[in-house]
View 1: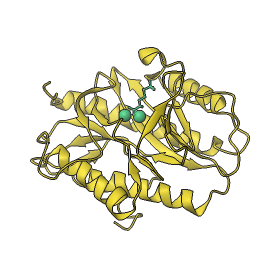
View 2: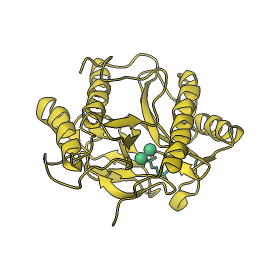
View 3: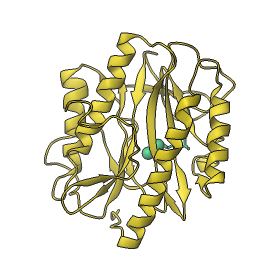
Length: 261
Ligand code: MF3
Ligand code: CO
Ligand code: CO
């Protein structure tokens, strides 16, 4: 399938959607505390999104029942908000996708609930580093395989974590998920050529142990086959003439600079 090249007008709309997505994560962050339920985070996100004139894309997407994904501990992705209270030591990924003026902004971040183990901290740090090393590959004439190779080399070859292959990054725009697929493993110089005006997500899921996942009986929740921890971070990226622009950037976030890459 052909990959869409956004017009300048469409790029402006993608910027607005990405900006709101980043702001939604900033709004939610202080609520991530021991005792809060993932349902409460969902309600806060849902209402904030509507209050800002946007629509939460996950709600009713292929039957998904909630407005955000909340993936705790061994949940790899697509965790469904529920009455479970977060407890000290949990790690949680919150994945948000507001639709603004017809365009999607998709981003997710990890949060520590209270004090978390050194192992969990290390997993989250390497996940951020992996996302960033992937982003730094984005430039015209490079290929999608360069992104996956950078992520895999860091997360697996260097740190011996499992890189999930069952879920990929994706093109994004008027649709939530469009071509191309953006794998988090790959071979340098292989795959689709990256061109200015493309918009896609990079969203590596990095597991402490096995990269394999099981899907729970709700049809959505993906968990690690060995039930060890999983972490994920996601940005929506625009390919520019010289490199990349992170459409879902926010004021406080890990960057290549703060990660010392
Ligand atoms: N936001 C997820 C992604 O990054 C997709 C969630 S689909 C849903 O692609 F239906 F679970 F919301
Ligand atoms: Co995504
Ligand atoms: Co997402």
